[in-house]
Image (cartoon, rainbow over the protein chains, first blue to last red):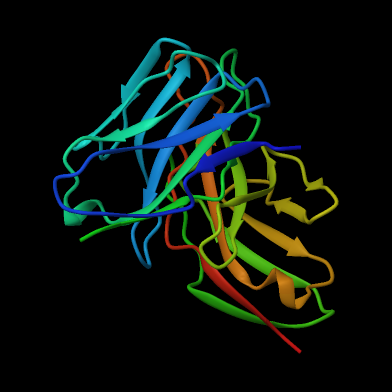
Length: 115
Length: 114
């Protein structure tokens, strides 16, 4: 039972570098989400996807990009890393459409530091 | 999505029931109540959810008042491993114009002590 898998678990970047945070799920969920959590705070939604080929912005999308070419994968890209993007990033997936009340399931997170 | 109010912290003795309250007085008729917890910066873990009726699963019970303005999460026999931040969230079902966003507040820090 893999569920939602995120890689890498930890990463340190220099300002201006780029990287991709990987997220894959094996539950055949159509909806996927990226959140970030700053120290002592709740999670904030960055981007979400309601199916392959469909993505949209959440609350805090600036500085990030996403793609959804398959049902399973939902990578998050940082193009020009900035110190403000130091955070823990969580990917989640869930069943949606048709008024689904099924819960979202989360990965274990990627801890990212920008120095 | 409706806002929720939770106490910032609670204590519980190991082996006793932990009762975590949540106020959601502005909840709409089509909004569900979800509970998640987060243990030491791990990913949020789903616990239970419900609409009107009380619910029980292997982890916990959820009691929703008849007017749906508040709810209580019950961990029947708390252990030290239940020490975590517990989040009460209300949201509509995912589909149509709703993409199922979860709005996390500050939650309740539950500390289970020996």
